[in-house]
Image 1 (cartoon, helix red, strand yellow):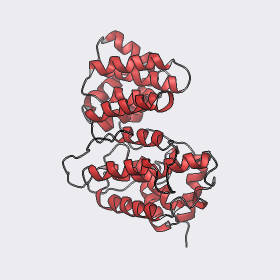
Image 2 (cartoon, rainbow, N blue to C red):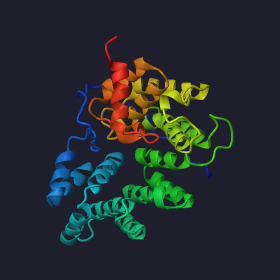
Image 3 (spheres, rainbow, N blue to C red):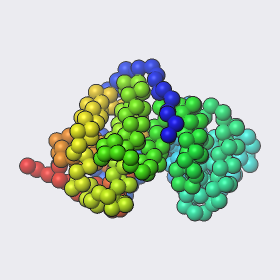
Image 4 (tube, rainbow, N blue to C red):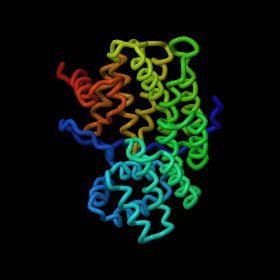
Length: 325
């Protein structure tokens, strides 16, 4: 595998922690997570009021992780492509409209409702309109994750990283795909672990990529369990009991205590991965603190691994560590 380039960057001051809301027992997942502006824009888009989305993306600016999160969530709406086309009719050459259309076509392709080639071309068109924006390349990376070769995956990731070196979603997609490579050594020697640890080590001290090694362990467990090489019950698998896994969990939890960013748009993705790993590793105190922090913002992955109902798995693990003692 080609080595990933250096991810060094400037160190920033830690964010002050803040509280969160209580758990949501509705059994529904909301991929908007805790972005306060996103649900109203999504609701407006379903009604064809794309002007609200236009304003949201305009004010998002070059916060690339937030922009990627918002466009991805909006693009999952069933009529996002149609309304993005209407927007482009009104504002030909709009990079925001072209990017929304591209990501909407990507998600249609992932659902089997659009040709991948059409989605790829839309992503390239959006990339040409906004050369500095990694979001069209995020669309190409999403496509390559499912429909492309590994060379396509690595090319899309390289272009995305060139525009935003610490792109959160992009690194998660890369790790997810590379975890499916065959294992060449012992239980804790897969190359996806090496890549994730290197990315975490080379990123700034406060970067959320510090949790990427935990994500790599979850993705590798998904592959092992799906192929019958690990038990279907992650807590009984022993996957998080080795010395490398214990070191990674300790380092990631310590990073969370010191550096957690309340304002990162995908922080709950990391929190859910950490809570999942701590629950499976038999560390209830750490898992309880993470569940309290997650509140109502559960995510389907990794609770669905390998083929479980994610809401049942999340609620069961949460109840186990939060029940009165």
